[in-house]
Length: 157
Image (cartoon, rainbow, N blue to C red; front, side, top):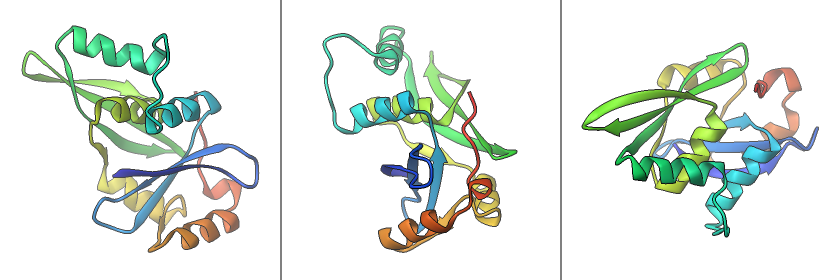
């Protein structure tokens, strides 16, 4: 998946990260917190701050320990909440670390790591109206405008 955008939900002004299949037309919106949205926006804009923010600190920690973020995986959709993990290579072995999708995306953007979403998550999201198969930006905007809050999933700390 690729980050397609970061928008505000018009019904409640909550930040929404929009992922899109690299070679497809499926959009996956994930509602996130304000601070996580700011961290993602800073990474997208490549803003350099004088002191490291949390996701920058994680990047520096990985580098210092000679680890590499191979990818992030959004692997589960349970009760409207998405679950993700970091796949970190250290000493040639993969280590899986539980993470919120928003934090995983913020870190992946900082280290240019791929964003994976399981086929099962995409299928479930499509079947429950939490995702849309759209061919253009206008269709995704229309879908978001018509979606009911209970269709969208929730952000969980």
